[in-house]
Length: 381
Image 1 (cartoon, rainbow, N blue to C red):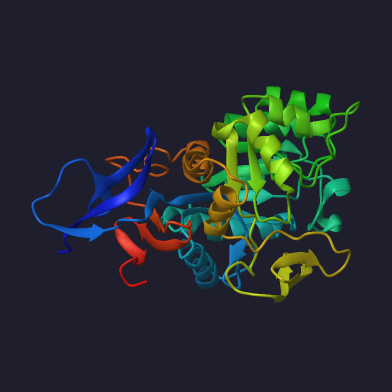
Image 2 (cartoon, rainbow, N blue to C red):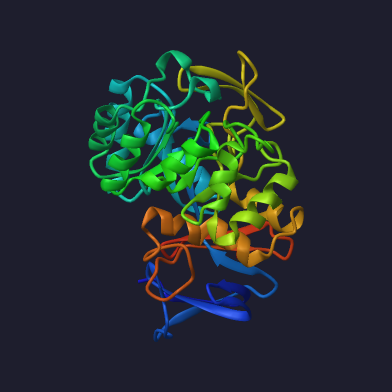
């Protein structure tokens, strides 16, 4: 039987603040509050210890797709992101035909039941052709509540989020349906006005899918969805902090107006994350990845990202100069609360899963633990 572990000497980020020279005690798969009889001490002096990252919007990685890959390929993508600190991941789909999406939901729901992923996010097909981004226009459809219900039924209770253009016919009724079934209604890939966005929030929408991207820009006479999403305390805004999707001033604007407790950093990653440049498929569309930026071969639209959350963390604290505790909230606690798993993950507290990340003084990743087992051992790095 493996010895319990005392992770000692690090700067530990807790919900109550940063503790210098703190310690976290791990017994089996859990964080505990008292010292077991036999323990192994791991000296993490000079490092940061933070909760494992929670990614609620991710399409794949390591050369593997959550949208079209086999079980083995999906697990490869999940493992790739674990190597970069994401200990909890939601598998996101892209627009496809309804039959194919229902089949994909069946496969992914089995992995969710096994605990390999935290659930399913349907991004499309219920989105605006005006703001389709890297989605196939021929397969888009209005958010008919009956069709939305088919997808969440196919997910067998494992659907966590559906992204909708809520201004389309059936959009508001679909938001209400999702809210009634405990599924996050996310506003995204939308051409909605300010007023239409407010209506969707009042109907039960709670997330902005990658704020600023795939929606009308903020205007002084026509503020559009961005103003409505930033100002409403019921909305959590997703941000892709890769230096490509957002200007640093946009990131600062979102944090300033929403506040750190209403931001969730996501990757929106596709297959190339943690893998490399080249040609890939995102659903039925071909993507060219060059210098780490993914764009559609036809049309040139940005097609997801190659981001991993350890890079998002490092960029946020070293380039964007955000407080470490705010970045930890955006990467761990906030998405965990949204997904309904904060009782298990999202912070370093006794009783929770021993999911954690070790970073050096420059915020580079050095260690990853998931459920008490090292995925990346800081003592071997």
